[in-house]
Length: 152
Image (tube, helix red, strand yellow):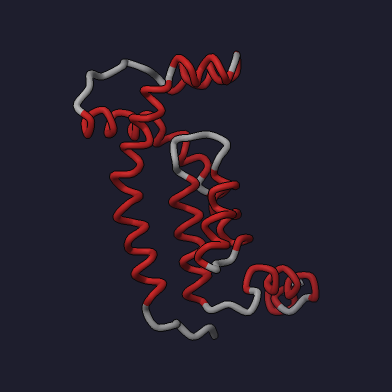
């Protein structure tokens, strides 16, 4: 099957319809950007709930945002410790010497004990993420207010 036949296949068109839902290219780009930004947030398990709320609030495409949240999930793991260190520097506290493996193993053993033991690191991680997220969200909101990009 060649590419043009696949591009016009009825199932391909149905998937495309789900992801476009009659919205503009600009809203698809914003959905992808918001999904990517929320997807790297250093708190495990809240991205889908938060992205659903935000996409409904800003009238964006939930499917695109959730897909991008899952696409950037490996980045969430890679940026977890750097966000904690950035937050520690922003708040001005000492380095905790945690490693990603120690945090991961702790989560596997007991998530509630981990949250109790690592609440300061989680807060520092959120602070580090917000250093990047707040300006990015401001750009997303400003971009949303601009004129629509026509979809071809």
